[in-house]
Image (cartoon, rainbow, N blue to C red; front, side, top):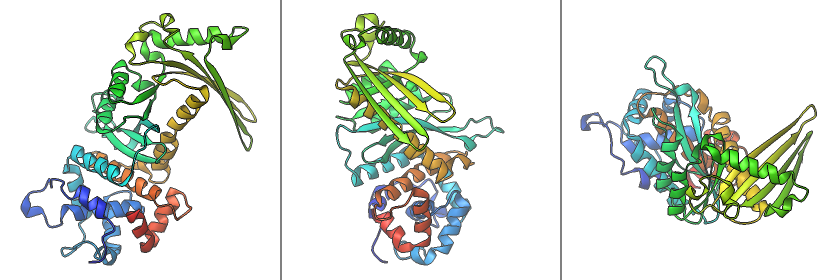
Length: 379
């Protein structure tokens, strides 16, 4: 067999426990995983696609896989990934990410959830699968993911996801669902910092922060109260977007915010006002945040904007380039494990820098050009 382009993946996924009984192991588990990864990189969206890819690319795959027993059927792919335990599979993904990337301190790690909309099973009364993912903004990589328990919500999944990660020195950003005192405490216990969006789900916190910020903003000299202010203006075709940020010292103004002392190491209250001017209308939205960080308003503008990279660079790409929202897998661990493979494919495609193409075009190129797929797998 030729040079192994999947050395790192083989190393980290090669020790997974095979869910099949011995007499049914016609195809090695690693073969099934590797073929699935290659197929998804090259455009496959379901197990039928994966089998088709394997059969069409069998000659190339034989260069680094032992395919004595041929390519597994789509039923085999489906059965194996349904039965393969999701937690160890995700642990292998995390170990692989750590091995091939260095997550530098000080960068933003955005945490957000995404629903796999077509994964619901109305016949069995099962709701759609919801995955919470962690995204490293500087590396532009998915770091890990955690399935939300069917009878719970993101509040229980986020702590489990954080436990997987080494976040010391990093800034964790989470939307309003993650604005919980226990989550703030966990982040600081793991030596990270947090920027958490505040909405009405936190009792009096939103009410008190909104009242305080709006009161001071209406003063003749608002900067007498606010620590800092920053503004950015972006112009794109017929759209103008203005972002303004004000910060308050949470320690000094803490007595005006009920139960502020329950938030671990809180330092700053942040108000962001976003104005979008379109040809036919103007939209204005105001949002509030709490943070364990101190610093300039300009820094908070940057951090909060980087949080939305997980929406634009992960969730949107998974839907538009991988067609994830149309996946109908729902049995056992199949949908969850395929979601992990999509994350692996996305990371590998992003790591390959020579082709100046979007993710969808890179998938096409990998499917058409074996030499380029080799580059992607070796990135």
